[in-house]
Every structure is written in C-alpha cells, then in structure tokens.
Image 1 (cartoon, rainbow, N blue to C red):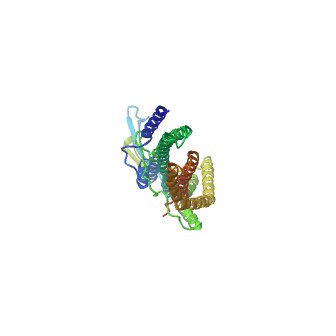
Image 2: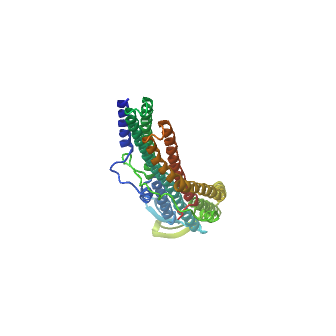
Image 3: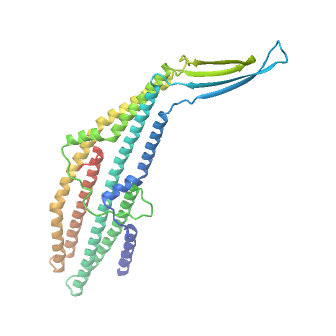
Length: 415
C-alpha cells in the first residue's frame, strides 16, 4: 500500500510539473490585456480589415476613369490622280467626367466604410478583453484549487502519520490507519485533477493572448480582476448605448450602404459624359481639329436592381441597429444583476466563511492529535471545510467573470 501511494504521489508530481509554468514570469492582468491587444489573431484580422478599408477610401478619392489616348492611320487614294497616295493620320484624347456629385457620394460611403471597420476593431477588442479577463480569472481560480488540493493532501498525510503513531501505542485500531491511508491517496488524486484543470485554464488564457503553443502561462494571484461595483444600472445602460462599438458599427454600415445606394441612383439618373478632342491630318495637307461629347443614355440599365439590393441591405443594417438598441439594455441588466449577487456572495465568504474555516481547521487537526475526535468525525469535518473553501473559490471566480461580463456589456472599462 505504501509503494502504491508513493507511485501515485510521483505521478501527481509529474502532472504538476507539466501543468505548472516553472520559469515563466507570471503575468498581471494589465500585461495580459496588453499582450492580447497586440497578438490576438482576431484583433490582427480586424486591424487588417481596417487597413483594407483605408485603402478603399484612398481609391475612392481618385478619379475613377483614366484618360484614353487613341490614334489611327489610313491610306487615302485620290481617284482623279491614281498615282497619288496619301496617308491620313489622326490622334484622339478622351476623358470620362464625373458629374452630379458622384465623387462626393463615393468618398462619403468609403469614409463610412473606414468608420465601420474602426468600430468593428473596437468591438473585437471589447470581446477579446472580456475573454482575457474571464480566462485570467479562471487560471487564478485553478491555481487556488491546486493550492487547496495540496494543502488538503498535506493534512491527509499528517492525519495518516498521526493514525500510525496512535496505532503503535494502542490508542486506535488498524482500521483507522487504513482509512487514513485511503484518504491520503484520495487527496493525492485530487491534486492531480486540480493540476490538470490548471493546465486547461492556462491553455485557455494562452489562446486568448495569442501565445505560442510552447509558452508557459501563469497569472499573478491577486484580486485585480475584481472591479469596483459601478454606479446605477440606468447610468451603465446609458453608457452602453453611447459606447458600444458594435452598435456604432451597425450605424456606420447602414450609412455606408445608404450612401452606395444614393451613388448608384445618381449614376443611373445622371450618367457620366465622355469628352474627347481630336486632331487629323488628311489629303492635301488638310488639318482638322475638333472635339465632342458622348453621353450614355440611361434607357435600359440604370442600376435599378443594384440600387434595390443596396437599399435592402441598408434596411437590414437598420434592423441590426434596432436589435442592438433593444438588446443592449437587457444585456446590461442581466450582467448587473449577476455581478451584484456575486459581489454579495463573495463578501460573505471573504468576511465570514473563510476566517471561520481557518480557525476550524486548526482546531480540527489538534482535536484528532489529542484524541478528542475520532478519525471518521475528523474526515467528515475536513471534507466540510474543503467544500467551504472550494465554494469560496467558486464565489470569487463568479464575481470575476460577472465583472468581465458587465464590462463587456457596457462596452468600456468600468472603474
């Protein structure tokens, strides 16, 4: 039995080495957020999309049609003089002109496109930062569970040693020793499970940060992830409606699509003329210079279908604006209620439960050592104390995650 327990402890130590991050400098929450802003793949993609929108804006400011230069040559034969051959030569320059304010409409639509991409980047940052906060809190809670499991294993080891000592002097029977040995092995198994959970939590945070697969991630164990309880729900709702970048992005998208529909309509109603000038040299040194204007007639195709599609897309973007305007207050309400309840629960555990658990733990081990309590009673009470501390960690994690949810719902960092 002793050899089996030693092997189990060694296996737990190996898993602990794999799940920990020895040699890795622990990250503060601020450092984790800063890393995610620069390395998260989703934020990189959103930044690239913004660069593309800025390129489209630069293109929209250019004249859409380049000038056209053409030339021609023809052999000219005079019938009255069969041997008289001449070469007619000509050159022509033409340019399509934008009229009716089309350039302004096109540039404004491209500016809305850039603003839309900027809002999408800000919204992606909002989502990523909330994910980092949740993952960071999850890793801190997992590390606390590992510490609790190891503390419980150490206590189980001391109880086993006490049971063996008391058995040698005849205070307890062999049954107490075997029960203590079983509890010690269970405690080591709990350590292995907690370490595996910490490994998973570290992987979640690494994914949110955009870290390399081989990088060890560790979080500083503090309460930085717990924000100060913000003001009234009405104030938070007003801030959310004013600051949420996804709502602003939907409005910019609606404006962009409406602008493109206006441009399509204007192009169809007021077609762009093409101005041309030419010069020709013909027989008997005749020189001809002139010009002309070509105007397409909007008879068959005025972009009617394209305009309908763009108006419909703009209406869809308007529906998204309406949905977010109605949904954001609900999101803030749910997050506010959840965070308020979590704050009350964590305050109760921190102020009342945890101090009582610490005092009871000291008394419990002393009671068994002195023979005041039997081993079954000690193990029952130990499980209760461990459960209380586990619940306290869960309450802390619930508050941290509820705080991240509220920040995400508001769309800006609450103080």
